[in-house]
Length: 114
Length: 115
Image (tube, rainbow over all chains, first blue to last red; front, side, top):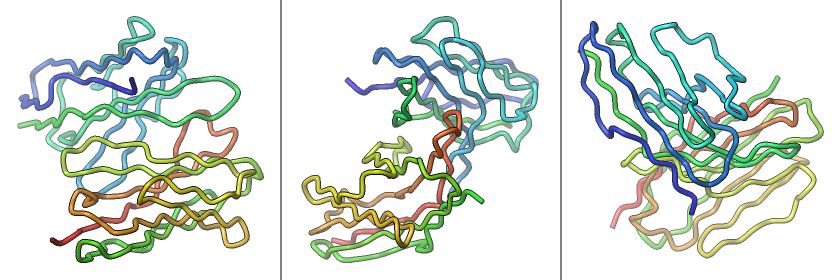
């Protein structure tokens, strides 16, 4: 089973709202990722968790706050977003270790900030 | 410099034609990994293949085949007898050995298969 699930599929939020995106995988992967993707562009890496510890933060604004409660779950907390934050948010996971493994992606959350 | 170039922005073919998507990469590392992903209109990125820099064997999986040539720094992807369901954006990506999980993405090629 190579499935990564994400909820919700679509989200519309105002600039003063607080919301969370959720991601789950049960493949035993120990690396999990958040990406942001704008239309007609490749994904941009936001955060990487490795063994539940934040490993990479690509200078993402503090209005995005990641959380990894356990090895299967990854959240992205959103607060005071701007209209330019509207995008497809993708979660991914991969094995971690001495070799580089492929990342498996979820279906994404389409976020619209009004 | 570490870079992936997919020069074809959009390709349109008629169903059953063969089509090749080009990917050229640049890296200073001797050990690296190359990937292809498919992104249909639904949005989910689907992993297709991973190749490490020491394995130059070409690979075939059904109608899909990949040609890896280190001499030209290319990792091209061919779909034989294309089908409408192959319509998607295809991304080529590179991970150097010490990249700490980071993928260097090409800009993507939008493939349109017309019935």
